[in-house]
Image 1 (cartoon, helix red, strand yellow):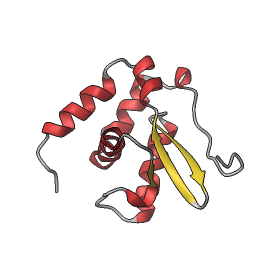
Image 2: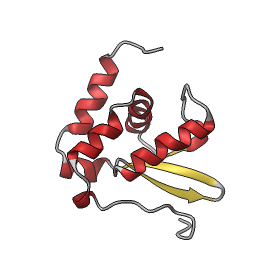
Image 3: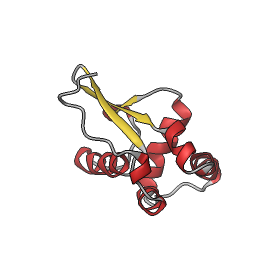
Image 4: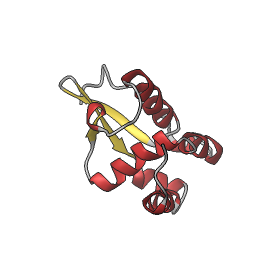
Length: 110
């Protein structure tokens, strides 16, 4: 991990439920979280299936990172994304599992 380029990540003890829920209210961000949860591995920013431009996707990743939902780090020139599922489940038990389950049964949005 390249510490010099790794963006800052909040301590989840300093993040409130309101901030996490506000980050997860957007369908694009829920899609990012769902893709990470179902992939079982970290995903490079460019490998997500997102219906938005690269600059808009960058904004969504930042909101999720600042809310403590994802962790970003570099591998070479690729910015990787990891779901902070264990930490989030400790802070907000069942939240991610409920979100992923709900998204799996949700109708597609356009």
